[in-house]
Image 1 (cartoon, one colour):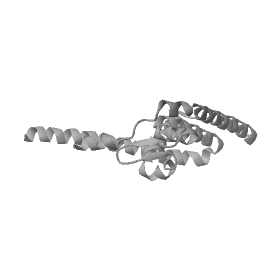
Image 2: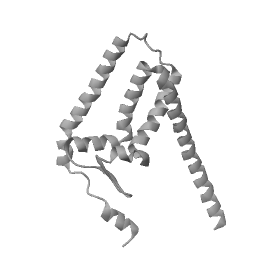
Image 3: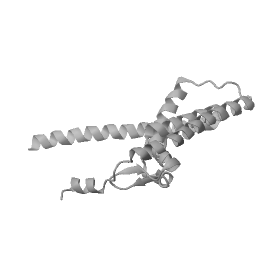
Image 4: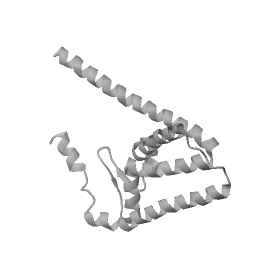
Length: 171
């Protein structure tokens, strides 16, 4: 048995259609929660009597990079496995949502960097408006980490190409 066969044998079957369809009410509930968070933000912002916070192009850039970094951290990094563990089954070869209903829906949300990224972007934006003095340094840190990660990925590609060229010349 090859290694690929072993991996395929270990891989669980994908969630059934009925399990996914059974999660639709919970997806709807998550959408309602997301919209309620926005409504709560608007109420809090209005009551805080802050002058309307100007969001600069730099703020948008920092929000974008920080959102990318945080969403990848939440959905993929080992350090945040503790967050995913109650709703996600993870092995060395696969990751999938566990359970049914709300648990399954939360697992799907946490495994999708784009999906959880929407929530992260919303929370960071709310924080930027409500607590700009404290949020901007956090955005800067997460953005620096995100740019560093992009640099690492780029260097990995360069080194892989370099090694492939060396191997080709040596053969």
